[in-house]
Length: 289
Image 1 (tube, one colour):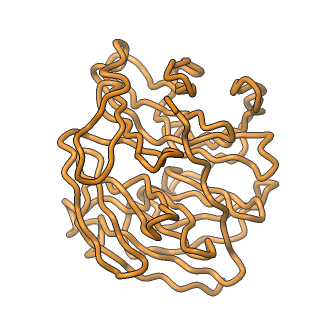
Image 2 (cartoon, one colour):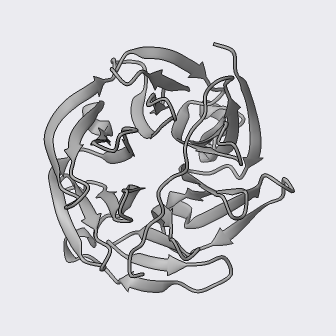
């Protein structure tokens, strides 16, 4: 498959994650989870910068009013805008004080699906943050809650459990936000890396980043692999579409603290363009609005 891959900004992220395109700014944001930093890359000026949040940010969404919603350690959730202080919606979740959020996804109604990491004593969970700010626990006993995305008809949600090496498909109820009829959709082969973050393109193809797999893998809506894009780093962590025409893929990587083993560009943000492959805008969250 013909493609073009280029590094855009190398902050040597320990765990670069959660890329998100901001259409009003024509910019891409992403996080370095354990170091509590957010970054912004302007597609207009090519300028990039860092924002010190001060605590781990496992995922974030763009709100309808232009603010961000940050999902952090201890179950904390806060509103944030560049240059402003955190405004907490949720100070903590009592069951998540020893862990943190990991990857989030907004649905058609502005609700947010947000997973948590496992601890030494129990596995992870998947929650739904509702528009009014309440939290509903949806799934328990998750090895490592990770990437999510909706089918183009919005009838199903893809959900990654990295520890199980599996991307599941759930029936999604737009009215209630409930998830039912879980079934494995993709089970990654041994030795090819672990499924991490993901997105769905305009044609309904699923793109899965592979931690320790040095690649991004494309699957048809039926689950058949049709593309495997190699990267010059080991830990490819997540992907999102962006740009005014949504014809660019922005890919985060990890391992910047060990470039000698993970690659000279480990922890960098990359731009990938594939002729004929485009995405669609992400849904914006409407929590508390």
